Length: 340
Image (tube, rainbow, N blue to C red; front, top):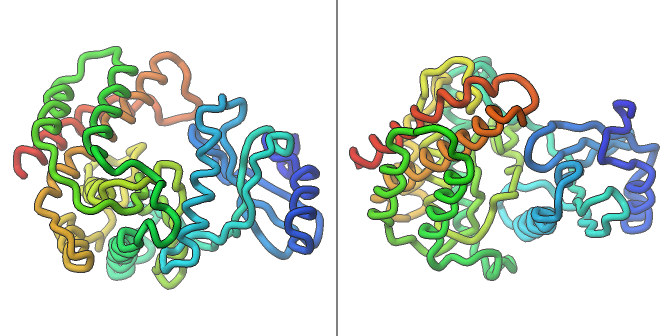
């Protein structure tokens, strides 16, 4: 297939659908390219030479288990688009698998940069880096301020027992990818279970909120939050804990995990916590639990990738180092819990 006809994107069928459902939207002939491969959903950039859109679909040859993700992602951005929360404008959802072989949705293309490494942030300089990360906190406060019922998301998740379910779920994930002894991980899991905090009122939770899942414009403001596949109704402080975890420099060059915390000017975890507390009015006294939970969750995710690497199931470079990161994450999780 040529670069203009990437696998998983049948441009003729897609054009037919857009012309039927959104007549006049597309002007010239469509071209498309894969923005990023990945083990999660596939993202394509689409253009008719004048306008640009994005198509999201499940991975190729994927079983139906995650087919509803598309509907979920489209539903949450459709609900949030009329609010102050920056998300791309949704164009359409297609659940008919005849078109692309899987459910998918189309949204407007948003210009901006997802910063993944300290090296990418460095040219911004200290002040602009600081502003970008602080706007990440402010945007999260805005997301968590949305009343789910008011935007039609009252039934978007099951907030009761959310933390307990999350902890059990990630414990099961860990058991599914065990093929080596990991000192301290069971201790961390058990300690988290013994110290479950009481959740505040539920909010729309992004589930994977970090600097490389937002697009930052030339004015250092957030233009769009992307990657809503983990979103649900639940405990908003899980988003804060993950953000705090990603704001702790790991001191590992060439890390397969985001290194933006190492950039000069990046605010400290403490400053991010205080800003979130001041602007949201939420009690953040249990933030060390949520941060430790984020370290645990990432340790489990990385161990799963390492496990697939040992079975020869990963594609690309960089997977050989992921196994070494796991003990670092376990250690940070234990320390965070102990220090409170």
